[in-house]
Amino acid sequence: LYPGLNSYAKSNNFSLYQYTASGCPPILDFYLNNRKECINSNNSVYEEIKRLKPDSVILSAYWSMYDGSENWETLDTKKLSNTISKLKSLDINNIILVGHLPVYKINQADLLRKHTIWDKVNTKTYSKFKQSTHVYDNKIRDIASATGIDFISPLDILCDLDGCLLSVPGNEITPLSFDYGHLNHDGSIFLVSKFFESNLIKL
Image 1 (cartoon, one colour):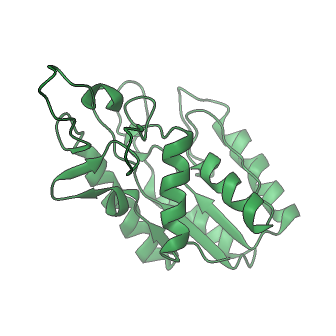
Image 2 (tube, rainbow, N blue to C red; image 1 turned 30 degrees about the vertical axis):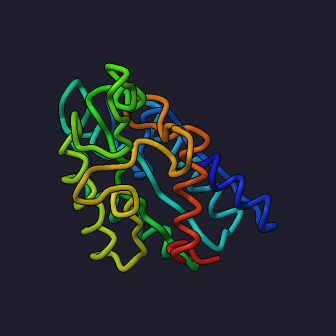
């Protein structure tokens, strides 16, 4: 999301602060054995939010990673709700929870490649798609609804009955992702532009 948000911030004259730590979801007091620094990192970010007093806070993560497998703890939805409550106590105007990006079992760019010269490149598909993506997107949607904050689902924007977009719409094939699910620069700018066009993020 961040290349797109940075680009939009520069062109619309507002300040943007990004705080991320690899493998750490934006959940206070959520212990992860694989990332023991997450609690301290998130506490530091919370203190920065208190100091900066921003108008809006956007929370996003690779939510389905926290499924209890491969030594990752299970997503603690109660602690996520508590985190949102703590942010609300800071009188932030807009708290936005972002759902799941499309995730595939192989690199998305590989799904765009022709196998023969007669093949047509399919820029939208559910082939090799991880269905857990939808499950966790709905979990995050429910938390946003229960806590009364805004929710954005990238799946609602990028996917339909035929599948999820693999390429930025246009005359040339431009992959949205550089791997199985992380947006590249072009993909981020495309998706975030849709956030603002649809008034999903209010400044």
